[in-house]
Length: 308
Image (cartoon, rainbow, N blue to C red):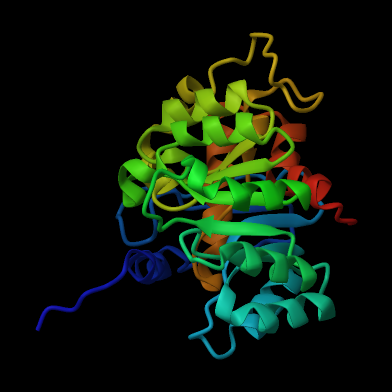
């Protein structure tokens, strides 16, 4: 009998092998396995770990089917000093809201809603009352994500000064292309728009949308970093404007990589693996030390008003 796996289940299972042998060292070094332990590639190397405060992971899905999910994450959080923006289905909103109240430095609640639901604005209002800080991951929808039918949701989120994270890339087909974030960002300039997966495979479109809109950021979660592992220097082509003045620069950091944030979109056991892949990209592309720190937590901490 053929077994059917969802996209997230597949990558979660596939990622288990990549964590074998990985450890978080106390000596200021990180062990980077770009391709994963099962690939047979001799790509493991030790690189200096940049000075970091709290890590902030924009892309952690609350997995209600895992009975000990919250406890497991909190243990990892204690070890890695990591905060999760926890993307929570509406039906589990109260569980995560209560956990966030108990652990405000470790869990930031984000609500996952269906923007086509007839009562979606009421759901958003309730999430706000419960202390949620944003929406995400917005993915399944009947229209393009920039369709005006969804503007009431984005307007509410803008009023709340929320972050709204959209899936971007092939799984969402044409409805979730990164170019659609351009229209949303311009219609709602006070809304922080975050695209997951860097628009996989439309990376250059994602880069240009981020370059032109100060309120647009992307993460490198999903298959983007594993797929690019053998050609990490290609990120220099996507984020090409290092020596060019750009009007949409959101901070004093001139690096184009400042438009990235840390996101894993993986099971808790594999968060370190994705972190190591980010570090490998930093090394390959010569990302400045200060920018690395902002990507891994500083940018989101500032957006969310988090203290160390």
